[in-house]
Image (tube, rainbow, N blue to C red):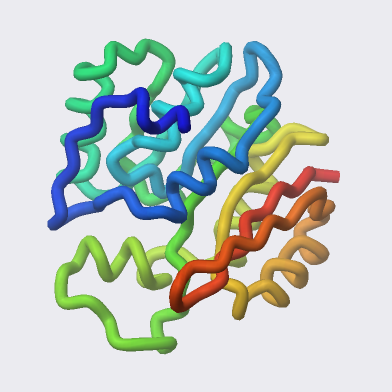
Amino acid sequence: MMSNQIKLIQNKNTYSVNADTIELIDFIRGIPKNSLVTELCAGNGLISMALEKKYDVNEIHSYEINKKAISIFKKNIILNNFKKIKIYERDIKNIDLKKNKDVFDIVVVNPPYYKKESGKLPTHDFKKIAKFEMKINMSQIFQISKIILKKEGEFYFCYPNERINEVKENSNNYKFKINEIYKKKYSNKIINFFKLKKI
């Protein structure tokens, strides 16, 4: 796996890489040369770094809201000598949509999986934001991705199986075609990995 070739600093109090992240990296394939890529909710940056290592992209714009995660992400970039990643400390709802309209070839996101009211919230603020839709929800992620992707651009992400109908509904609402769904069963959950195309 490409992620095994990357040196990674992690902090359990911000974001630790899990199996879903690795699976999403492996699910993304065939990114064309010189593509402009963005990762939303980038955490410590493993997905962005793996994509730079695997593909001859133009640039990768990586958005993350948490200062500690960004600090670790920057250290990981220096540690691995990556050159094509630009990090933005920003709530993705505050992306300049006029400047970035129809710009990106690829959007990737490992989003918060759960609605705010769907379970017991973690006590740690970062884990709460990373796992639950405290700052952004599925519909908003679709809306932003629709605006910043070029026509025919590709959108990669993952969600638990219980939210697959919401994914299909949002795909229809925001004019995405579902090109591929890959299901991965873990011990206590099923995660769906999606590849969509903007139409």
